[in-house]
Amino acid sequence: MLAAIVAAVITGNTWWLLAVPVCGYGCAWIGHFFFEHNRPATFTHPVYSFIGDWAMFRDILAGRIPF
Image (cartoon, rainbow, N blue to C red; front, side, top):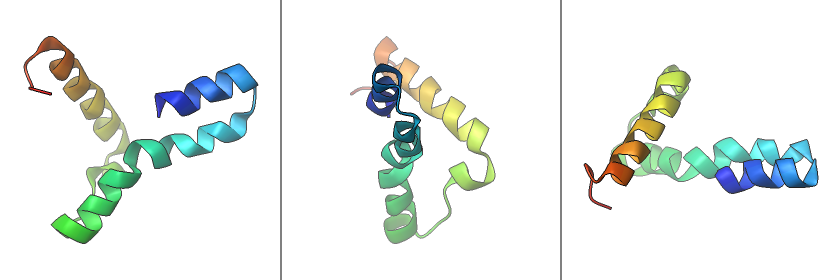
């Protein structure tokens, strides 16, 4: 996800930004639909889902969630 944003900035090609949600959430969406058989929160509350991802990343870096 971050690599696509960096690629968009470096190359000046905004088409890279279309890859951001696919890279960031594609695997999670597949897991929700085919394994958990539920609907991801990204579709109903996209802002909260995005904030929650960064909060979990912060907790991983702080050592609260083992990597």
